[in-house]
Amino acid sequence: MGSPLIALTSEYPPTYFRFNELYPKLRGALEQRVSGSPLRERVKIYGGDVNEVVHIVCDEIQAVDKEAAANKQWSTLNIAFLDPNWLELHWTTVARLASMKRMDLIINFSTQGVVRSIGAKKFDTVDLFFGTDKWREVDDPNNEPVARRRALIDFYRKRLIEFNYHIDIDPNLGGDDIAVSNSKKSQVYSLIFASKHELGDKFWKQAVKKAKPPKLPGFDF
Image (cartoon, rainbow, N blue to C red; front, top):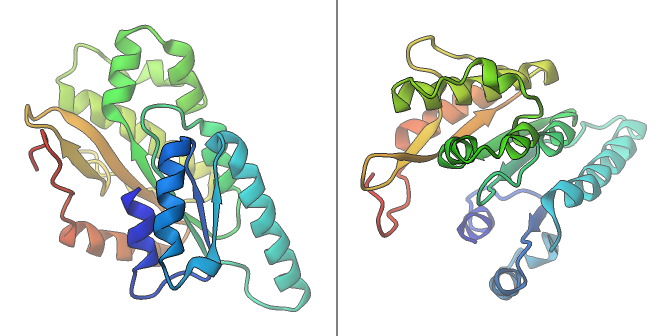
């Protein structure tokens, strides 16, 4: 709920906004809040499964890009913030977005969701999230928790290389993700970023240095 409002109040807002909220009650609250924004005419709000809505949004982007190409103009510059509650975000959805010509990605990687799903033997769910069963080759339950999560995040990020994203992973530190832990120091999720342009990585690294994770009840940052 908070991220759409932050986007709408940014200093340099995008030309168009596309939001999706599956749950009717939350979607109603979002619609009400968006209605009070001076940028409301730029907004479309969907209420479906993100793995289905993604095709509507991408088709729209491709239509705009096609028209721009016909007029010898630049293609659209896009950024997608993918913020699932758990592991409902399928890899095919990420891949669909990644297939766009100029698409930066910010993804809420639920490390807690991945580890708990593996522990519950919900392997099909984890396979859909990673888009492959090869994650088993990098996951070692006997590893120290931080190292185990690091291996899974890095595996996910490396999967984006095939879409021409610049993925720079330090063998000791990993990537420039933002990790959020609870009061027990257990990592809940990480925000990971991917761009097809080096300038995007530069901006993200600057943002990471200034980032102040939200202070939520029960969380220790």
